[in-house]
Length: 257
Ligand code: DAK
Image (tube, rainbow, N blue to C red; front, side, top):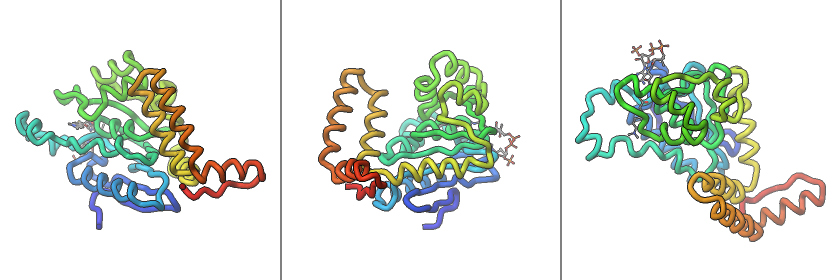
């Protein structure tokens, strides 16, 4: 299928989605979200893909949900139609997703980035939840994921005032895993995604599930959950291969089995 609002490509075992509505700073409208969800469905189902990258342009990862599309909405409809409930597809990806963020990541754009597993920011990135300035509030996890990522004090100020974080602040506060020069963003994100995509997919997916469980459960339950997953990985051929390769002083060749 041809996409109008995103570009989709693969590079080895990495699936790449580039948000592409340049005239609207990649504002997220219904059509873009539907295309993004379709691309993610395909990458998730494709055994040849081990990691996904989502990125935007140098000027904007995404400047939020499309305000012009939201402007005419009224409450009964937003509720009965469950307005853009499909936004959480990224968070439901079972394969790892790397966000390569340059420029504005605001509102729904910041929320989309926070649904990804690893955030790599260019030095020009700006993160913010400016919805309060529009008379609304974050609607796709902004008040929740941001608070868990950077703590109440900073999240509260951002959500209540619309203050934007620089890339350096986002790094210092723990919102992103690191900041790289803008010119190196795509190469760095690909390097990370390539590394993950070359590892054993079962161990990668279980590891992602285990880290995410830390946000949902008690420490004791989380540790029990982790131990069971760890034990289960000894049933894989990739565990045999990974350990044999170490002993033989060679690179492992994983079969994702
Ligand atoms: N929506 C629609 N168009 C946008 C846009 C947006 N969010 N952001 C930018 N644009 C458009 C501008 O209207 C302009 O279009 P033209 O006027 O040229 O036709 C073009 O992109 C370039 O923008 P500017 O001319 O404004 O560029 P500047 O460099 O001067 O400013 C800016 C860049 C990012 C500071 C500024 O554009 C801006 O403040 N944009 C709005 C940022 C914002 O408020 N974002 C939050 C939107 S609310 C939900 C899930 C999610 C959400 C809600 C519910 N559920 C699951 C229920 C999310 C809500 C939001 O994200």
